[in-house]
Length: 284
Image (cartoon, rainbow, N blue to C red; front, side):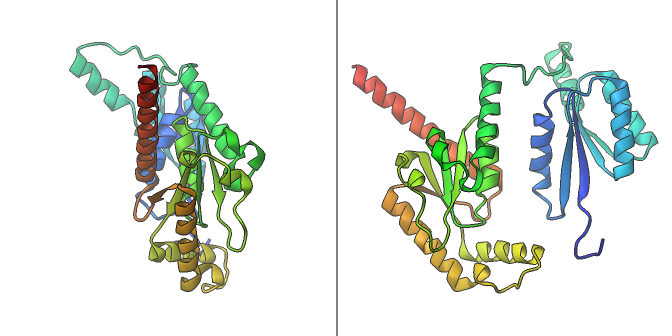
């Protein structure tokens, strides 16, 4: 592979449970880098033989191994076998559990899967993730009404990664793109305004992202998609639509997905408090 298109770095996430903790931490860390990378998750790794197998696969792939395993035998196998085979390993939970045990003066249970026991909350997150996948990029508009939240905006305003991140927090999130020359779908326009968030961004930042996308697609760098006047017009139309429909706007400029998601979750929390206050007033 040539220098212009480097091979993505491989990261293996190993877990004795669902892998969500390790995956989320890895994604948060990798947002700090522009280098291409991809992640493969190994769930329910609770035997030393499984750990050895993952390390051997990582050696062949040239991967780094990030693990959240509480059984010390399995964790030690990952560390030691990794060192033997020249595989970098990162133990996310072990040092924290050890320090917490010292601080609390207590012995940890070291029971796998405690964080994601099969609670109502766990299943709510699973349902939300499945909903976000089914309703990505304007798909399945007929059932969009079942969303807790719908994100909309012009192309390349982080609608999909935000939808998936919010879904992992239990928010059933759909996203609908605003396409130049097309009227937004009726299913989006009919939603209650408080259930829609309009995403906006600095025009210069959007131009940079779109031109990068064109390079990846080997398309002409100054196609209409990345034309400054076109981008300005798209953003202006989007903001006008947001104001007309009473949709709240969130600016993603210069923000990581986690930061934007935190702001959206704040808005949802404010809505929930307002609803509880209204209900309380109605009961008086």
